[in-house]
Amino acid sequence: MKNNTIFYILFIFCLLACKQELPKLDQMHSHSHSRTDHHSYAQPDQAISKHLSLNLHANFKEKILSGEVIHTIQNNGASEIIFDVKNLVIESISIASKESENQLNYVKTDFTLGKSDDFLGQALHVKINENTTKVKIKYSTTDNASAVDWLDPIQTTDKQKPFLFTQGQAILTRTWIPCQDSPGIRVTYDAKLQVPSDLMAVMSAKNPQSRNENGEYNFIMEQAIPPYLIALAIGDLVFKPIGKRTGVYAEPSVIDKAVYEFADMEKMLIAAEELYGPYLWEQYDVIVLPASFPFGGMENPRLTFATPTILAGDRSLTALIAHELAHSWSGNLVTNATWDDFWLNEGFTVYFERRIMEALYGVDYVKMLTQLGIQDLNNQIKELGAESDDTHLKLSLKERDPDDGMTDIAYEKGCLFLMALEEEVGREKFDEFLKKYFSDHQFQTLTTEEFLEYLNRVLIQPEGVEIDIDAWVYSPGLPSLRPNVESNKFDLVEAFMGDKFKENNWTTKGTEAWSTHEWLHFIRSLPSDMDNTQASALDETYQFSKSGNSEIIAAWLEKSIYNGYYKNIESELENFLVNIGRRKFLTPLYKGLKNVGDLDLAKSIYTKARPNYHAVSSQTMDALLN
Image (cartoon, rainbow, N blue to C red):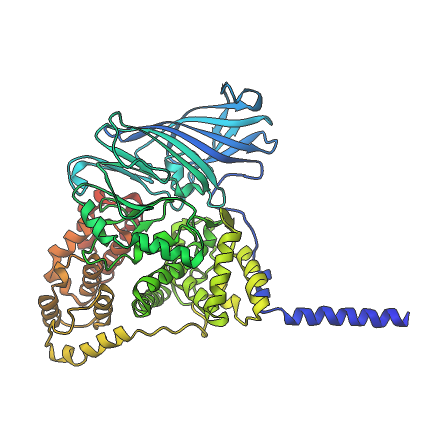
């Protein structure tokens, strides 16, 4: 008995000692660990779509996509399968079972639509039996298909032919395809599209590189992807290659500008592979869309959708291409399981993007990008509130639009967290970790907690890392211990500014070699209370309000709104807001007009501009201005 007692005491002591040795990462076990996606009605444990086949006709006159989708499902003996739909017309649904799937002998089945939700749309309940393997849904889109932007010729760059593009992230694919619209569900797909014969169709799949005569295009995506990455564009498109595995699609008047701008795409791809392993999607192309595209870029596999606002003419804004390319690993290859885990997509991608840019353009260049990103992050935290739950990396977006989580927190705080890990273990070991992470989880989805468990097991415990995970992932604002990045080039910008502002004696001498990033730091460093005389002198010297660089003019317009100079350049402000649909630029400008008490001007411009915006942008502006 005495020996047993001693053994028991020793056993308890060992347990306590082991617990003491665990790093602070163990704090995460007190947090929710769930793969439940609150933004999808699907119940994948009962029946899950594994492959979908689209057969659609694009009617540009009526602005409708119509046809059918056939889901090949994994059926766990369920009596129904649930899809996500929003603003779709469901005409009929039929099913096929194992014994009949070779002959595709479909029989009609019952279905019901659930209660409509503003964000989620409706649950489509389809009656199946335990042998059902295929579900065919005949349907058409409506005017309220938020993912689909139908553009009249006048809204395109060349103004000759109509255009269509889709934007599925976060939960908009359900507005043009009945699907299980969750990032935690991956599907392969094929598609047949019938489009006008003078237009060309491309998708996030294997694509044609020239137009055919009958307007019929066939696509296949053999790698499993989440539904938000299923994407379609139809327009007057031409293709030009850049490298062996890279190329560009654009309207005829844009193609040469794009080829020039993206000349380093193949080099970026090679640099990315050298960092974190092989590119597993065969081809990497970019399509430059009309100006109504609401984002800078969208990482649709094999075919990044990009805004024309990055065509600066000097290749200065191509970090965006590096970002979307990096998504081929972080986001597309390894995907956040829910939108609460969005930082797993974007924080990793910002870090990866900057490593690509460093490989091509050097450390000083990336320090500028990083410092601008930290400025954006600090502004975002100030806007959300230093104690806001929305400044956590792990979000809580239940009963909210997942777009609410698409802020600089996921991008820049996520990147800083990875930079902090790199500082702790050294770049060589951290690169080995990331390469293994992408390899171990390719074509899979992860929650934040699953990633942290992997991080703990593979990196933190073996290396004895001391880092406050809870402060980074589950707490507001920024930890006090964080990477510090300083840019010598920005120091030179500030030195140039020196006393020039007091003297109002501006010159272009010394600025000839400045990049976009140096100009952005210059504009951001200007005091918000400068008077019209000072602002006018700056504008006359540097021609900010007439800049062809969208980043520069947007930064200048925002600064001008808050110091009142915008009244002198109102036509330039209106022209920019009417002709650019990128939400990143629109939000601060409309918000600025609202904040300075000129809501009437904001609404007046918005009335003219709104028809040119994609629903992603217009919904944000509607909420902001109304």
